[in-house]
Image 1 (cartoon, helix red, strand yellow):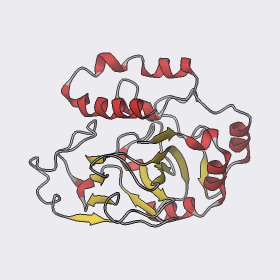
Image 2 (cartoon, one colour):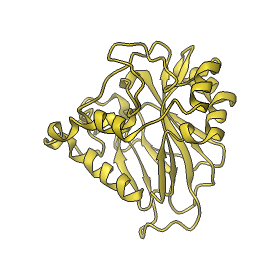
Image 3 (cartoon, helix red, strand yellow):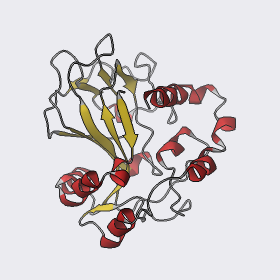
Length: 251
């Protein structure tokens, strides 16, 4: 990416206000058939260089696949030649892709019924895409990695009502949960670090964000990722580290 930032709402009040006051939460609640929506994690993504090949989203915050809803809101017109997200219809139902994998080989056994079911969306400013976190998808960029226009997207994962906090320390998934919020595995996901945006934002949560009590420190990050290296020696984490390397390089 030319630029990428996680939890943009924590440092930029305009994005926080968008979550609080726009129709986004209501639309996601309708799509997920839930009476509550909380932001689990988000990303501001600008120009994904040569693109992002077939993958599933496992940076969804401290929640399970079924508790999450992915969203993608574009701020720019998609170029005609490249940049349109492409999804494999129904692929969230597959039972063969490891839940810790990021990149996916769509030729692997067990994906035959999905690999030719392509859905492409050439989005315009203000459009929102919604999908299940396990849905396999990609975005192709220009062959030289140089975009001639901006492709700015606000994306992320929201949690449905009743979601329980899932501690992902020791796995790549922890990188979308680096704040010191005090929640433990089994707790209800209720915290200013995961703000409610539907049916209405919470004044106390918003005040905590405005007062700077929601965020990440180097100490918090080290505590959370301390056990990652030892557990990540197996092949099942390989695709995750390729993504981590590309994100660090982009920053």
